[in-house]
Length: 306
Image (cartoon, rainbow, N blue to C red; front, side, top):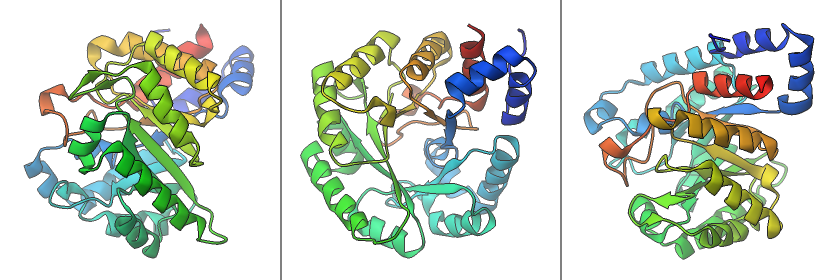
């Protein structure tokens, strides 16, 4: 097969072109979904000048193109962070009101760093939240100016706040950065990763997103992490994956993607922009693009074909 599907429509046409593929799709990956991060992680790696000059109308256009071409169920459309650090998100509330009014069938997530921003987001209507932490103290302090212990306490406070919103249909996704390597401290031992994931799993997030911040995760490392989390009783089906793909590592990322499917992981962060990464903690030349939609559908197709 020389040409892989590049959008939702073409992938589903392929799936229904052969009964064997249809059966495999229904039995193996029917619940698998992309989680669109174009308008958050896809934009935050832009230069400061690019961020300051990025118009909200451009975001609306990008949003419309994503819906028309890929139709994802979940989209992250911005972040409530310090606008001096990431000015690209100074219009998150305005964009949220626009997309929520025009497309109520989608779940629109906003990344929230602390309780103050959480209260503000709840007040302007957000009901789907992304929180952030990591498995590296150095990374966490540079990214949020908090230690891991301070972040954990902060997460407890925010989850308790949401628990008090009676009758609300809320969803919380937790990003766990540096899942195998910290851009400051280097490789992290699997024991430390699993210990942190165990503590975080007690807070009852809807999804825990394992984030390959450095774009260096190997399939062997991923298997070790998943197997060890299973041993301590973590439900690995609550995991999702945030992968950064360097061109020379696409084959390795494909292996990770297929392994994740084998373990029942059904959500993968995807961006329609060839950008991404934590620009607050990493030099621009070290950033790698997010998993693209083209790669996402290619990997799904090769999984069905193998």
